[in-house]
Image 1 (spheres, protein in one colour):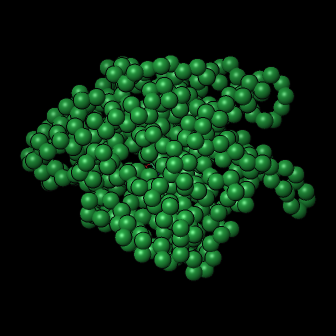
Image 2: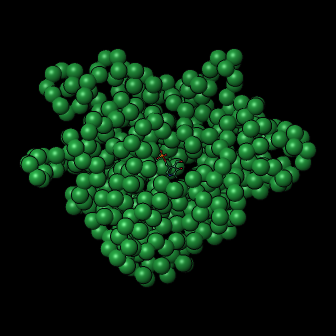
Image 3: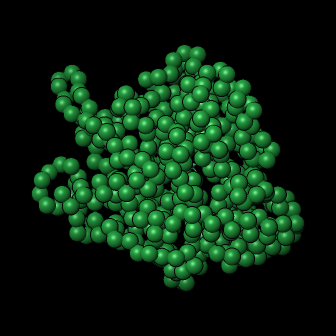
Length: 411
Ligand SMILES: Cc1ncc(COP(=O)(O)O)c(C=O)c1O
């Protein structure tokens, strides 16, 4: 799919929703960590599939199906090579949650046994936590936590001690969706491998924000989601090490994932089809391929530089507001493009609602990270997050909005 070269300064015009009819209400979008907005090139790729090439994939030999299969597999090729993976090791799923469930249920069920230890961190999103709780309960394995320090980083000393338990698996997020912390995944993986553990990384917040090289990280599994990376909803990706994927049993079974089906048993097709049962997300994969082209055209280094500068600016500007406390690393270099904060005397729900009246979109709540909230003795926080289309003007509006919150709540 052809891509349009764009530069970050003018990129907001690429997102139709940001210029929507003013009668619908203006949008200052600071919630890309929840879901990103969609650039026109991604919408065009989806419309092009539905308008010109719609057919199933891999299930026929007529020209339309060859076109749709080429678009679908072409998207997979570009997504894989973008992160340094291979098409066979790049599995399309419904989202990050289903990618992580695939690992927990397939790898976990085949490899965990009574008394085994699984390590997760206190900052995991529920998607990289609850599947491990369930599989540990089923296999009678033990779930242990790598703690988070007050500064929002992982306690790597305790991690070192936990590795002495010879865990079977370490599950860690690349970038925390609450604290913004960029975890040292390459180092965590090196240490885990030294202890004989398999490493599963939740890269959901990292992939749209940072240059990611899977070979450099070295993890065994890396999961992410399309709708936070300028792609459509309903698609995620699991990258896995080929040897492990080949040994693992299927997770979801049915059509497409088989080689031969006999009356009582079946054999499985090659990777990645073995883990893509049924008719998969064709339009969504094609859209995600266009999203990857969009990010590639901008350059991940440029995206990171732009969003890191905005994050540093927001951290500075929040100091203007009396009663604000920020969670996570103090330095923008150590965090992704998001900032969670509390305003003394204001409930995040009220903050979100008052900002919302001004068209400012921020996330409020527990961010699907309740153990982390408990660790910080918080019920919920307010989170502002950035994407390529944001600018200092958005930060000005947020800061003005927070002054309005203080006035409205008479703080
Ligand atoms: C760090 C992290 N992991 C996983 C997820 C789950 O993503 P999805 O709902 O697309 O599966 C999210 C979404 O909020 C997230 O922020």
